[in-house]
Length: 125
Image (cartoon, rainbow, N blue to C red; front, side, top):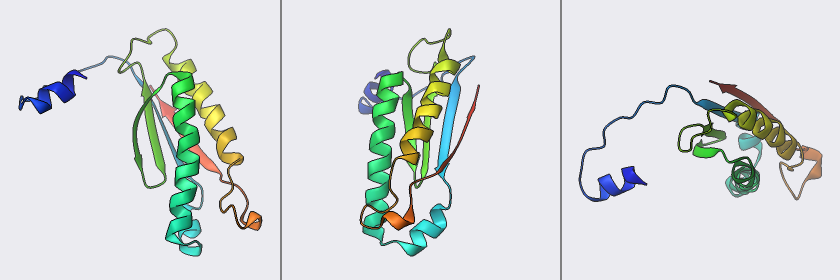
């Protein structure tokens, strides 16, 4: 919030340092092939459906979503809120739930033969 206020008021935002955070990142297995074989509208629909589920999980696990870039989803703990005692646990549980959510998300709702989404995940403290 303080960064948004500084930018709105034309002030320079000074970098901040956190000693310990945990960052989660994921991408969709085979996304290039999925995109090549699927219309742009269906790719957008797939990403919307998947990341809507991830956004709900981020709320449930109290992790802060940083960015989605293409098929990549990035979030962090112990950055915005003080979570020094359980930041790794929050991200690990989020990661397991994200894998489960992806595995339940059809690639193409009109073509079940395309299967469900598979993701790769990682996190680092």
